[in-house]
Image (cartoon, rainbow, N blue to C red; front, side):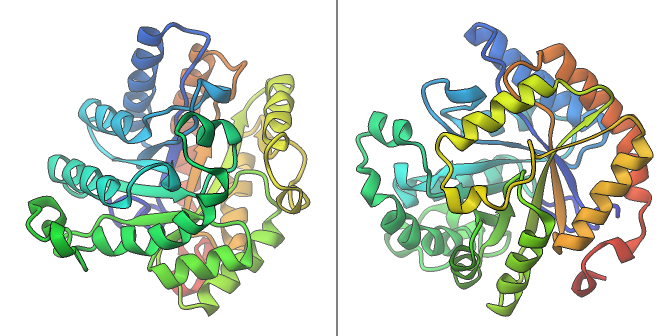
Length: 326
């Protein structure tokens, strides 16, 4: 299942989520973010993703797009995507401009994902009413996708980077964990990204709804993984953090901590490939970091996953991918 393209979210791609280590000071956090991105690139991952929460919450970043740019400067190869950015917290046009200009600096290596947000802290500190989140998101997602295809630019038609998106679109994906959400993404011309804990049968249902709605863009499966003896207490603490703000309707589809742990690299690769097939995902995004996992332990997981799991995962033939992509 080697990626057929080096573009962000390409079919068959395997990327890594990267998170800050808030046990360090700010300079240490920045250094490890870039070090982990470079290590992921050198280990054979196709790309990296960063994601947004504010106030140092649970090991997230307030500036995922800026950090994605830093990472691209450090990575010898591969793509980077701020995914997800909390779309209701910023003007759509401003986000589109920033993404488009990053893509000028790193052609073919940039993607973006967006979410409506669910954590009150994020809205409070940005003086954005929480009740405005979904209306802003519903209006903003299709506009962002169009702008990053170089379409309907209006008064921004003179922006050279946005205009360049007509010939080299920047791929956009949306978090989507319900049938209405996947239909919204399909209508917007956006791909979708699933959470890291939901049961594969539920995700297959969402994939089917997306395809029925005419969705043709990437379907990204997040999986939290660990090769070897896992730090179970850290995983359980992170699950409790997510439970504190995730709607109960979504939690009903979770399974345990969401981590896929094996001592055997082949068994881990086999389970990931099977889950891609079962869910109908087109590409895979792996996560090893949670608060309580040290920067050194994360770096070692990146190394062993790259050396021992990625080759076996890529050895799965095209039949592992959803039928419409074979």
